[in-house]
Image 1 (tube, rainbow, N blue to C red):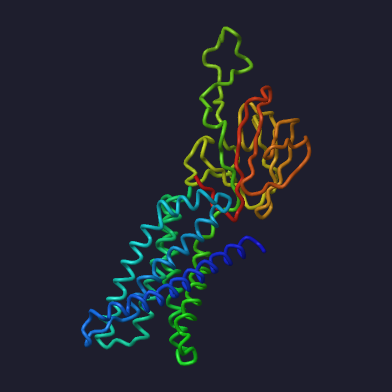
Image 2: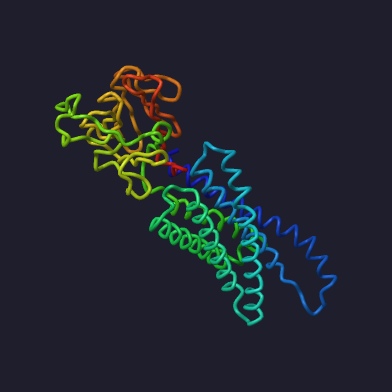
Length: 368
């Protein structure tokens, strides 16, 4: 399976499971709580079961989409993901989601009392649930993603909210169209379809806007502004106006961009470098004047990168200068980089000093 299929399958699965789980819990609660409440409610007044349904289903579906987005974006850090979800998001989602569900339940009751068609009321409710799930999923992404700034956030929120609302519209419209055929299975089939469509639509809304990236780590935080003396400069520096060059890591290739906003001038710790989808010539990493990724103190040509549709092949160009994870890459040997691998580049004359990158593939959104 390719990356898009993996994303789509996981999103759809989370949507289906969360929707059916919410529906099942609501049925159990209605049988227990609903029966108890009816003892204290006047006979002429009845509590609609869909109020309990909407209060439970809304936060459940929303939580499922947030779980999908969190683990798809960063599947190698399970503990960090659960810590983020349990400490930060779940409580807020369930409080807000249940409140919206309660509002929808009351809203439904008012519309039905006003003789609105039941099918139309259900369609409106599902549209709002889908829109809220998409909105919450996009906000979750913006809090953690290094792309979560500026116009990209607005675009993502609009896409996710719109796709979520569209999923609710399609699922509810289909269920109303085949209402007679489904009979008593209308609700579970409807939520199964709703969860699957919502997951698939948000999968496409959440698709990363770039292919592969290198995230700068250890070594770049200690970089200071230093100057390289001109070869014509003597020990006494006769010409005080001799040209100098800043010894700071930087990009010398227009096909390489800083993520998220490309406003950086130098490579710094925590900054990611977006690689092109495909390279026509090798990307050179080194300290030479012609290096595409210029990093001081490395060999003039330390390593080269070749990118083809998200697959990145690295070649070592200098002896004992490139390490992938815990293994040195022999000179002139190549290997294919995999997600979350650590790339270590050593100083030319000091093996105790190095720079590190973390590689991210196109399936994922590099995280802070």
